[in-house]
Image 1 (cartoon, rainbow, N blue to C red):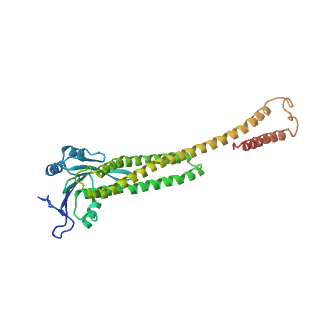
Image 2 (spheres, rainbow, N blue to C red):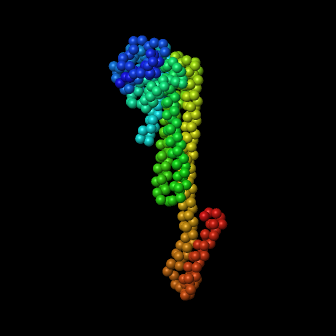
Image 3 (cartoon, helix red, strand yellow):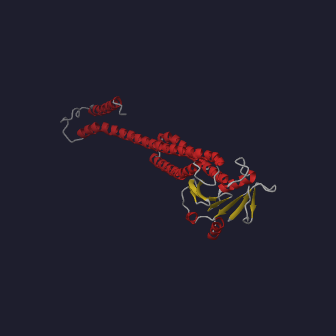
Length: 334
């Protein structure tokens, strides 16, 4: 489906209006926005022929799975923008393909996009103000980049809140011994999912920053010098987001190491306790074994012929056990 929107104040009309057919001529002070949602091969061929789109750029649109980039084809500029979305608690990337020239801009996407709807609502409400009174493709291209980069903020806020929850759960998880191992495995798996999510965002945002760097250097045609100030704001946001992603990745490592360390400490305490119990019972088992052998009364078994022999034997075992407990505590083993 192709939607045609003509921007420009003419004869008292609204800043943006939908037109049914391609205008034969785009006058000064006007700009045509062509939005193609899931276009067919015939529609792409028509756009290619009408606007002189490069064949290699059109192939990129057809094949998809492109990284964010900006390419100058002389007659027009081709750009790929990644728009992050959250779907089923997972981060996904939507590709937005853009062609623009002096007085027209083409956007191509494979599904209904909230970004397109947001930009459409904005330009119908107030045009491209306060960016400029006269619509131009570079300003509309900036608006798309601004909306796309800002879409990273709520996702990263959600990731940071999730890491905060996992950090707080660490103490609670190890206060109880119920399903401790299962909880640790589940949390470490969750942290792995968060790291993968951050990797997807970083892999998308890094080339976007590089693309903005090309614009800031003035290496992109059809972008006026007066518009660079607007692009600088998006450029700064991209740097800020990349720093946030790197910090969150480091934090995931810290949280994962915290859980592993707590689990190791908990395991060490358990082994320490079991070792202490086993060590205390070693001499008790020795005594029990000696007094359980079948010898004649009094043969290597002092007190076996006395009525108090049993009680003396039990007292010796208790004193031995308490002696080990005292020694372990004094040595700070338990």
